[in-house]
Length: 89
Image (cartoon, rainbow, N blue to C red; front, side):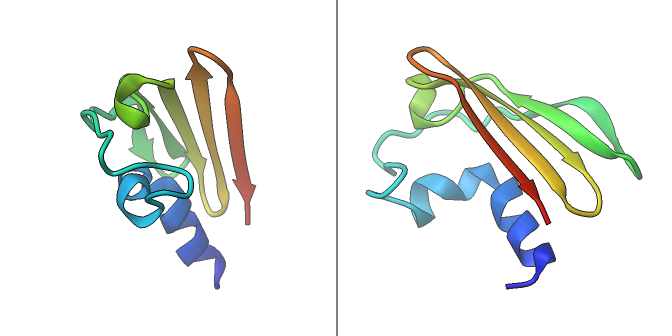
């Protein structure tokens, strides 16, 4: 897998409930994918926030940061725990 495919896959949070059903997500517990940019898209990347977050809001909100060509960070501000996923490709 090349870095571009990896980055695209990791950045696309909306695919997780469907592609990873029964492993790390559940397509039966969906919420709004109400992601909005908190920093405009530019050559320096972008930042955004998903207030509902995964699992229909049960886990808390998720923020995302992308810096081209190969840095991505998802931070889950959990109700029960916090989680950080960082990819540098």
